[in-house]
Image (cartoon, rainbow, N blue to C red; front, side, top):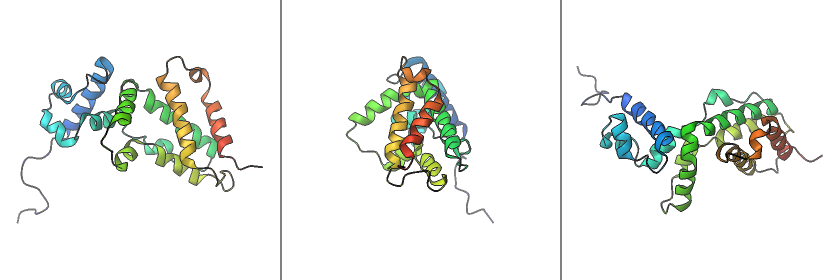
Length: 194
């Protein structure tokens, strides 16, 4: 009796996605955001453009997944030590934005999303966002260490601004400041009033 769960046809080549994502990162670093097109990725990776479009509906989604696949969950799992968790989170987030391909893509992605007339589904943003991990860290904090009146999204947006300044602006003074100063700033924002 044949296995009913198996789909007919050729098995999917798992290396296609890996080759396309690697080619996307290489092209971003070598040629920049505008030159990283589906056709250029297809030529570089040896993957047919139609196979790329079956996995990513546009070059924007391809670039987002190649450069900001989300933070590794184990690197930001909350321990309940708010300072330590924020420090680990900030380091992981900075590492994600500091990768050469991410730096090459960030400004173009920001410009695209600001000018795009097509709204993107919230799931797309959450796939590449570290906001859920940040909220998990705040939920795991000891009782009384986070002011319930503080909006976690506002604090995350400020943290994102600090990360972008450190990674995208080459002469930003924040780059010379230790991460601990940013952690202190976030803790002050979160602390309940005395």
